[in-house]
Image 1 (cartoon, rainbow, N blue to C red):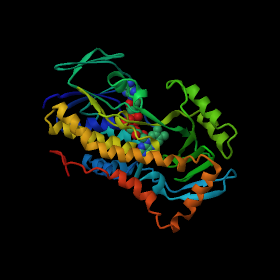
Image 2: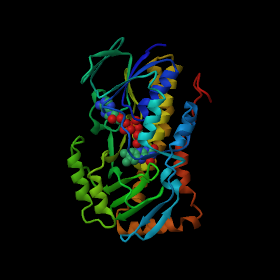
Image 3: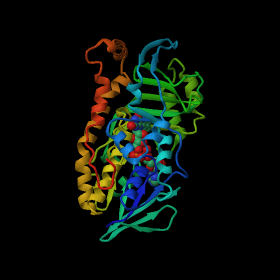
Image 4: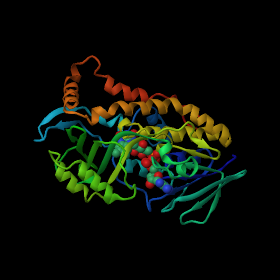
Length: 396
Ligand SMILES: Cc1cc2nc3c(=O)[nH]c(=O)nc-3n(C[C@H](O)[C@H](O)[C@H](O)COP(=O)(O)OP(=O)(O)OC[C@H]3O[C@@H](n4cnc5c(N)ncnc54)[C@H](O)[C@@H]3O)c2cc1C
């Protein structure tokens, strides 16, 4: 196989999934992850459509199902915690839902014995030459690879180094999200409770067999200037945005101060004409982040990894042919998934009291409306907007 030595940046979902398939097709992947160890924890992510077939072909569907959150309904409440609307599990949780950290662990465990993982390091330089790519690292000695793949998320380091500044490719949807692990102080039993004020959504859902909970905060805002590495500054932004918000907000903000996995970011999409430059390509959020509002990011990462590795194998390692085919195969699927997020914002973070009332009324009437199935069918349609090729050596 040509171009056998593949360096992957990022060990979350797309990176280990790609390593899995590359290994299966006879390549030798190395994964470098900035975090000192596998990042456990994190929020719930869900699978829809074709991604479930990929998990099945990996032989990992059973393991992911065993780790499923099995979340029940979500109740939207008023400031006195009185239920306003109850939404069924499929609205938030897709066909199969799992904590991102649990998924990363399953993918890592399935690959760690025959894939080289390097934790606590990061690529600092990528220089392509006729025969391959010279890579420098923050800590390790420079190394030679045949191909480099960025699976390092929305703020991809590989993309910045090779494609250019993030601002050229990032499209903010006008929302920010913060999420973290907190005590399950409401005693929730596989359910969630969400509260809205105009332009703000606060929620909490139980996780890990109800032993803990995830608090989430969404708010609408134009582009905010902040340092991606400065967690204290991000905590202050969230606290400021939710100051004076009713319901359990103060208690949840207080609990977020202790959250070991505090997360804050904009809801953004990445749009690129091509997912590759020469011997370097991108996969997952780095290439086509759909934003959490789409509920399709994990599906995209899993399917993208399958297609990228499959096309490399089908082209016998010829990266020019493979990267072109990868883009062509995925383009329609990416568009369908990204489109979902754009419409979802107002439903999840209603901008005004009028919208809030309209949203709640619609959800309440939904069981009686002729188009009630639409809310479930639209994401499913996007999740199935690709027909998976049966690459050689892969069980159909
Ligand atoms: C709040 C929230 C809720 C979400 N909900 C859903 C959902 O319900 N359904 C769904 O399908 N998706 C959801 N998503 C999206 C989903 O989490 C992502 O689409 C998915 O994790 C993408 O995987 P990835 O591997 O491409 O990127 P990421 O999961 O972002 O992983 C990138 C990895 O790269 C590493 N990295 C970063 N920089 C470097 C560097 N310089 N060097 C080495 N490594 C680096 C990071 O540490 C990380 O491990 C949600 C996302 C968020 C933020």
